[in-house]
Amino acid sequence: MTLAATELAFRAASVALLLVLAASLLSGFRHVLAARLGAAFALGSAAHAASYSVGVTSLIPAWHAPLIALSTGNIVVFWLFTRALFDDEFRLRRWHGLVWALVTAFSFAGCVWIAPGGHARFSVTIVNLIVLGFIALAIGQTIASWPADLVERRRRVRVFIVCAAALYGGLNAVLQIAVAGSDVGSVADAISTGVLAGVIAAIAATMMRVDGADLFPASVAAPAILAPRPAPVDESADQKLIDALMRLMADERIYRQENITIGVLAGRLKIPEYRLRRLINQRLGYRNFNVFLNNHRIEEAKAALADPAQAEVPVITIAMDAGFQSLGPFNRAFKAVTGVTPTEYRRLKAGVAPGIPVAT
Image (cartoon, rainbow, N blue to C red):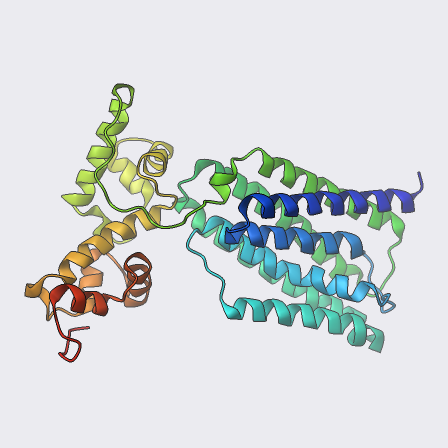
């Protein structure tokens, strides 16, 4: 088999795998944002597999330009996909679409006008610096949010998926910057497409081994703070730990502590972190440790806001007493749980008429 045929086979296999992965995500989890973004990322990666070349010159075929532009914009989709996959509360905003459109448009302009104008190295360098920037963002936020993730199988798969995709994308970006404006030949392209096919196959196999409900929950609403479910006899040890945890929350209000971590909480209970994560996730229904803490903080804030004796206490004081570090995150978390702002909640619960001043 010639190098050209080998490269074509790798490209075809990559595109086929990615199309199957996109179809699988949409058929099973079309109503979940992370799954939709995952499907979009798979389709953008298919465009990359069909159009990518290590050596980029100013002579870009016209039919390649849209594929290259979509491939470049796909790095923004990758960033958004990692946000949605590992943060159950993530929501798309209009500016996310604007960022994708700007990156895609610049890449298209580079293919059609900038590179043909004799500035291929400049165009390729800028595009790949953008790619490296979004890869760094994806890796940074994945690392930052990893300790609070309570879904054990998702904790494991996040490292593989993000690192594999980021490593391939990062190495290709650096390589393209290094050889921009030159044709490095078919051997490099064949190797690159072979590596891409291997990475895609590994990611697809990894995702298929994980329960879809772990990666793409049907509902992201935070569980209400209820008394733990009665435990069967063989779960009595877990039930005792849950009872001890709830006492720490209700009696000591440990959630008020600044920078409280699951490690600190596990230390207080004298159990390994992994066991505490499993208990909070499987027994109390939480997927994120910060959401677990914030639900308790919000319950305390709700009680204070509904208390007529605290009607003159500013909302920011109530928020910080409950453990929030600033007003903005408190307002967002409070409205996500209750559907109203803290001030509106105080008016509703304390029976204050809208025209009467309320402490904020």
